Length: 93
Image (cartoon, rainbow, N blue to C red; front, side):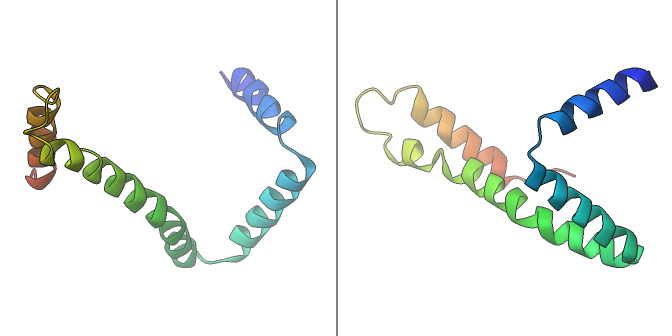
């Protein structure tokens, strides 16, 4: 199992450019010098924007289909968009 992981990591690093390797090394060095709480804050801050953008894109994509219910050809898309928007608006426990 470890050998397969090692081979995959070698392939991953082989596909990287030299600049990417330098950036990754600098990031790893910076992370080892920081405390765990600071690492958590920085990691959460870095991941927050992509998560919010993905959620907004998924939530706003069906809006035009839901609003164009009376247009010809939207007999299937419009109800589907309404169901998707309803599912996003209902919180689950």
